[in-house]
Length: 78
Image (cartoon, rainbow, N blue to C red; front, side, top):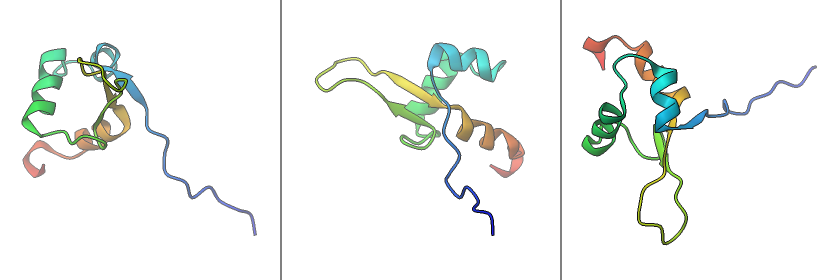
């Protein structure tokens, strides 16, 4: 029997600036930060804070793979 790859899909993590371009209309820098701050997007699922220890500013990276899964669900059923 051939072995299959049962590992999870590798997440595509992008900084906010690149994520806005990849996601397109409706995902500006401000709207992404609003979704993070409101708790709509969960840390370690939809985004990660990739800053060094002791750094003041957040270095947010967006998990494009998970965000696209959300977009596949109709707005009325989210």
